[in-house]
Length: 341
Ligand code: 13P
Image (cartoon, rainbow, N blue to C red):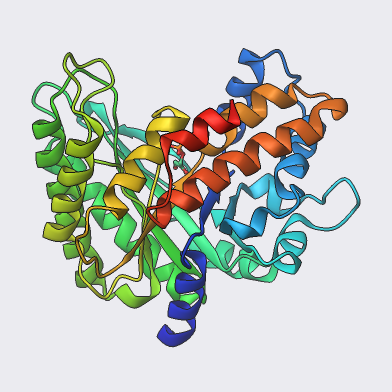
């Protein structure tokens, strides 16, 4: 394992003012989003959609890496350039989602464990050949009555660590994603408790397996009230609790922390990230975004599967990328949103 090389890639993915575009929706997730807008759920449409995203002019001003799905890394842009090659030539590092999804955890019917370790070494070798230089594995932790269980947190952390080491062994930077879901009416205090524990146990497992922390990125969820909670915590509180949680659990040798958006609105996701970056706390890691929905949802609704809408949709994507790139520098303002409107 060449830790220095992994560190160079990881640092480039989260360079100042840049974040990661998560465009690695699996078929079921992508199709669900297409269906809700009446877009045909075909391979050609998924290709056309991802082409619209990837070829947005100047995307690399704000985006350092793009996470692809297995189908996409094997596809080409509409002009016939493999997506991974197109990204690389345009200054964006191509990455790949490698987990096989979250499945019900045996003995714990309300909880999930992420699968996909079987044959992963061989898959990594192929993905490297296809151009991937970083990867992603998402673990899902649900907050509810009496959950998460210790079994769920430990099983997911263990799988994340085994995945991360296989990734590094292949020369591919792992994005380690222990997502605590926003679903539910839990308080921000409860979210803090669960998120800190999940992150702490994840780093313990990463250490046990021998993962080089200098050569990875953490993709956490923010510490936030449940989506259906009453009196949801405000932006400042989310920022403070999230920073407190990261400081308590993330070692300083990790080069970057890149949040998922998890169902937050576009504006919330930008405002929360910005609030953390203007707090005045000196942070040991870059603090940026790896958003899926908060970068794409407006663009997808603008596109609607029509070639005629491509330019407008690209502008919508670029706008969210710019807002979040600014938030990563602590330079995002509400006035920017008004300007866009
Ligand atoms: P969201 O930002 O839509 O939560 O997606 C990020 C992601 O990659 C989840 O794995």
